[in-house]
Length: 75
Image (cartoon, rainbow, N blue to C red):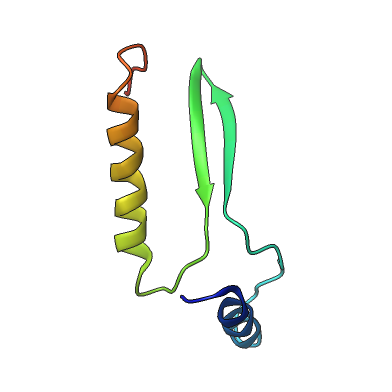
């Protein structure tokens, strides 16, 4: 997806055929704790054809950054 105006227009078109109710287009990272683990949940908007590549890049980038810190344990 391109600039924010293109995204808003695409969202408006998609909302006519799909149940889309939010207008906040910024990405968000939600954090929670469960059984002593920190859970990060990402919310982002992208074109459906780009989802897997974008998700992969986000996860890979996150893992690379976490690897720099020996006190962070990934399970």
